[in-house]
Amino acid sequence: MRKPMRAKTKLLVPTSAMFLSLTILIVFSAYVLFSNNVRSNSLKQLHATSQQVLNNYETYFDSVIEVSNALLGEYSNENEDNISSDMQNYFDSIMSIKHEIEDISIYRKSDGTLLASSSNYVDLSNDVELENWFVDAKENPLINIFSPSSVSSTNTYHFLLSKVLFFEKNRAFDGVLRVDFDFTKIVESISSTTLGAGGSFIIYDKNYNIVYCSDSTYLESELPLIKHLVLGNSIVSVDKHSLYLYCSSISNTSWRLAIFINNDAIASAIYSFSVYIIVLMIFVIAIFFILMVIVANNITDPLQELQKEMAKIESFNYEGYLHHNFSSTYEISELNRSFNQMMTRIKKLNTSLITEKEEQRKSELKALQNQINPHFLYNTLDSIIALIEKGDDETAQLMIIALSRFFRISISSGKNVIPLNKEIEHVRNYLLIQKMRFGNSFKYKINVEDGLDEYPVIKLILQPIVENSIGHGIKEGEEGFISINVHSEDAMIVFEIKDNGYGMTKAKVEELSAAMRDASTYKGVGLKNVYQRIRIYYGPSADVVITSEEDIGTTIKIIIPKVGIKDEE
Image (cartoon, rainbow, N blue to C red; front, side, top):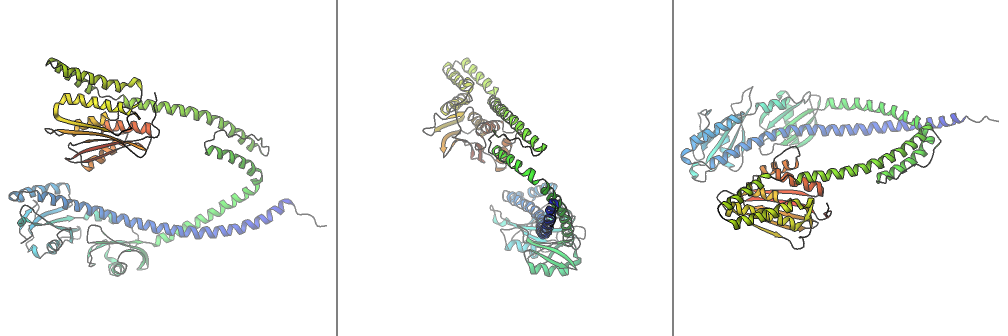
């Protein structure tokens, strides 16, 4: 009778055969997938590198166009009798900031006569009307013209920007701007980019005339490839090198950029790295598979039970406990006991954390609400004293009543939340006091949508905004107007505070909005106070939105949700 095979042997033989087949399949699949993935990622990286070089140039040329726009605006505001001297001073100021500008000059569009120039002006000693930059600018009066400069040497790289400048006051002074830029530094900074053997980048115009080439060694063989590709990217071969070619237009100019990056080293790196990963993967799979076979039967079942209990925790059910006493291994039993202890501690810590966070939220809210400006109280009391001294007791009495109501609502018996009509009454008293103090310097209007009067809101959110409108928005010597409009939009309540004051630039609005949201800055204290308080109380759905236009006015919108608003404290 044939002796039965030992269990250990019976387990190892089929397992080894299956493991060997699986390992070969995994290694082969991993190598193919990883190799393709790395090649794809490498091409993306090459594209990103090319795009970065392009972005650097586009950013530079955008700054060049900004100079052109600034000169256009300055020239249009000039007095024709002082064009030469005023513009020369302005040119010199720009050149003191923009060191890459070598020379700025303006020529009469009709006959090429010099109208204005910088102190560094060098006479061109030829007929500018025949120069390409002058002719192209006249033919395309609405765009900036970029032209190669004839003064470039082996150590410096120059280009010219030209544009027609319209002089609306007297069309006889319509001119053509000429700015000489030295872009050596930007070229040198990008030249340091590692493009590999055979790598280079070329700037050329629409007729494929070369403006700049970082390495002219392979220019004769590279130029046909550029003409064939036109725009886009491709893998090309130059002098036995595999190169990644990227061609693109430089925005806001008539020039294009071609970049050649060596692809040989990338291919070698892909191969070496793939081999390393494959070897490592084989080793890890082998160890993992052996350990899995040994411990699977003893570990899987208890771990499945543990996984079910952990799934309850993921749904925030903290009642999970393993009531079984698994006797398979000491470790599983200890894991069971540790899990039960952990769940007990989690429940206690969660309860404690919720209580602590709630107290912290209330403390932060109260601290922000207590930031009342004492100067308002002092100034109001001084105004009351002045009224009494003048014998205007009636106005003083009205101001005292308004001040009393103002602070009664501010205190609100320690409550954080008050009805919306109380918040409106609070800001109305504030406006009444300020109007009695400043006379007829401003008017105001308050409008509240029907049905919103009793909605509970956190207090003191309107007064800081109105204070900003009075302090910073009202134009000196003009009658200001402040309107407060409260209405609902779907599930939100919107407070809109609008004034007709000085207004702000777009940049100033962006700066103020950023400062309002940045806890580390202290600009816009009133706005920041309101923003932080509504975010603490209402969460991320609450917001403060600033819109403004210079010399038109400013609008502040405070947006809070209806859901979640409740009376408390």
